[in-house]
Length: 189
Image 1 (cartoon, rainbow, N blue to C red):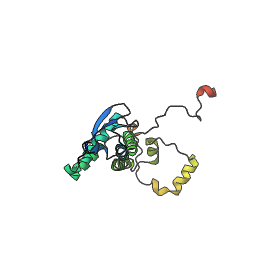
Image 2: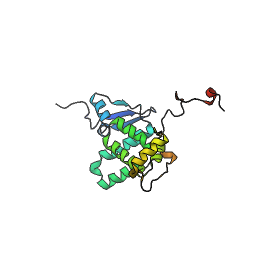
Image 3: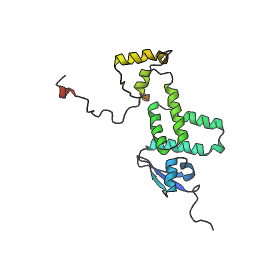
Image 4: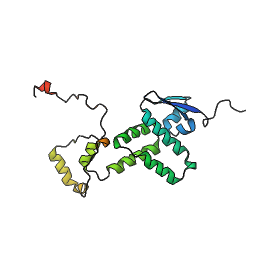
């Protein structure tokens, strides 16, 4: 006896972004995301993705669509698509890594992480710290000691640049830390 419900291949899902935009996507494409697949298996067709902006979600849907059509694309075409997909700043790529990880899209997470690794390859420690907004834990003396112990890691020509577009900062940047003391509190000018 034939089932009256539509098969997963024909089902249309509604993905709702953090910006409250809705995107109609075929289930066969969207279920490449393990998180979405699990929700579909639980009977959901309206899927809220409150951690993912519309801008990011649109590109992820494009990625999933292209990769769902593997049979229609040559490996070279797919590689070209992936190369174009990751042409963005490290800062923007970080947003995509968070989304791909949240959605459990392993191939996309790997692609993005490799692209970030390629961009920071041959960067100096200081440049990587600036890019990822990492504060050093060592005192200058301790850092000099570590550099001396691992001199090989600091050899060769290293790129000291960190483009402002690549700098990844915490969303809460600018908010007061408990350890921060304002000029008013100290009485200093």
